Length: 209
Image (cartoon, rainbow, N blue to C red; front, side, top):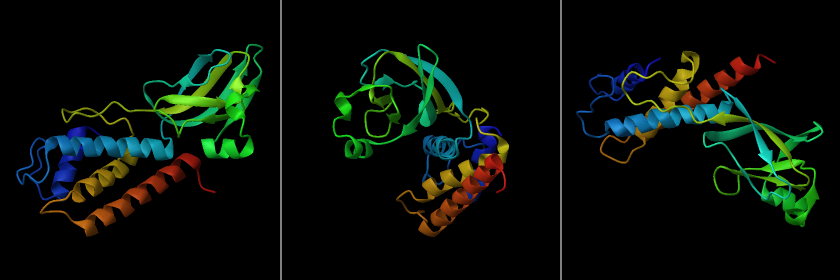
């Protein structure tokens, strides 16, 4: 689906004249806000469902205390550590509290990494524990930031089967805006529909149990 089609659907729901998201005569919302809403909805869906996954390899020198993630990184799906001898070790996700509780000296410990931390430090950086020694390669499966739509007929990154999650996420955000047409009840309904769409996407991707 192209962005203008979805923006027109959103305008219908907001009782605005549908014109592909070009204008909002009520002046309650702006074109820029609508674009921010749909782009945010798409990023949320990709991050929650791991709908589309990219792969990269990052060379990590011995003793590195942090690893620079790709500039397009949005969320990590899986990691593995590969030595120069091609021995691979799956890495498990953790946060600083977990690692501190298990091993208070982990920030000074060197060895073969067994966990990665990417949620409690600067964006686009990742830490390994133990600190890698010797050098190796980080194999990374991650969700990449999609190309934002601009309201000029650009296609969404997510397939049409999942676009309702983007639509209701965007509507929920717009209807929550403080102003004369704020509608908490409709915003809550949109949130429920977004959650249903995310669940459906997870089922479609994972199959029926």
